[in-house]
Length: 153
Image (cartoon, rainbow, N blue to C red; front, side, top):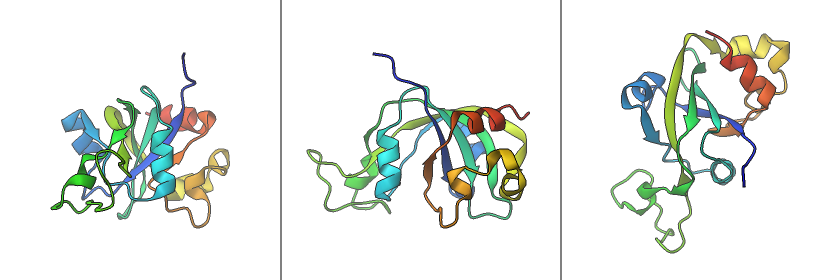
């Protein structure tokens, strides 16, 4: 059964993991998500879904690149590692609490689409990332918003 392609915005602080790091690595597990709604979005992801790679908590936040979901969701291994910042003592191998997907680099935007530019673009007004109080690290993106942003050079 073929599933409909979905689109996502995934935030990362560039000091922790940037679009340049993903370009170098080619692919990475998107680990460390510790918000239940963001986790639920990860659980909805499918191989090949589109990703807008967003830099957050930095001088110029915004979309810096395009990536894709490169795996089905699977248990986040960091939840089982006692030395990890993302250790979850309630999680067991039989009943994990947190999931990841692998994310693969597609391309870096020549110029980022900054949060300021996104806020002033009427075509993007409905994006979840622009809504008051939106702080999730993973959010769905409407196909038309993804296409509009991904069409940038």
